[in-house]
Length: 71
Image 1 (cartoon, helix red, strand yellow):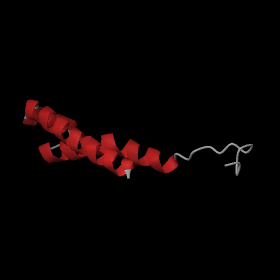
Image 2 (cartoon, helix red, strand yellow):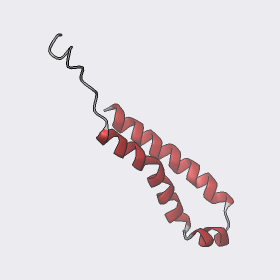
Image 3 (cartoon, helix red, strand yellow):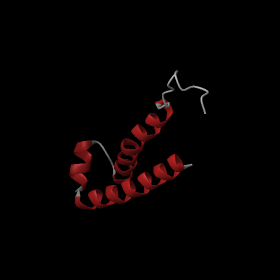
Image 4 (cartoon, one colour):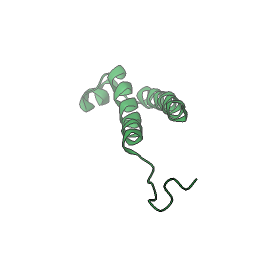
């Protein structure tokens, strides 16, 4: 549940940051990067949230074999 909340906050903040960056870029600068205004925002959000989402799938808490079942 916390992970979903964290991802939602990260998407919201990254969208806000991307919109501020896009406002300062000219059409020529965006074209040189190979983006339109909307594709830049979506790529920015994807670059921020993809590592978070992938990291949550691969993290597993280690189990100490000496303490397993001791509780």
